[in-house]
Image 1 (spheres, rainbow, N blue to C red):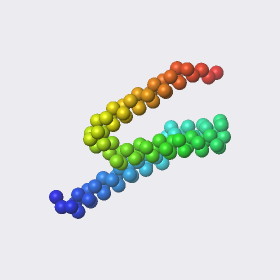
Image 2 (tube, rainbow, N blue to C red):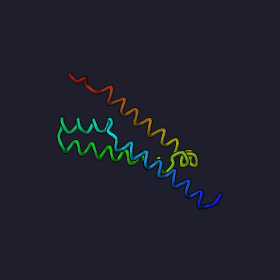
Image 3 (cartoon, helix red, strand yellow):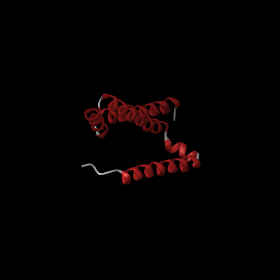
Image 4 (cartoon, rainbow, N blue to C red):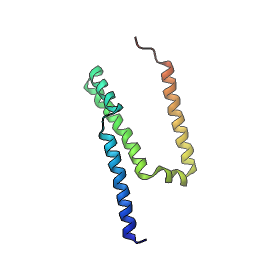
Length: 105
């Protein structure tokens, strides 16, 4: 396979991934509803803070998607264990706060 063909294929795949992520980010969804809720209930400052948090989360997901987290995890098994432990900790954190939450009236 010629070098130009490989780069063309890679470029096409890369642009496809970027386009899909861009469309996913700009379409309204749960994050949009959450920001609107924060804005209406708590004001502009909280809505901006929520928007920044969502943007940071999207940045993390897009970055590891573009880098190819599968390749990184395949080459370093300890990273996979670390990611699993971080995910488990996150789920435990969410579960703990969900169980401790007071019901809204």
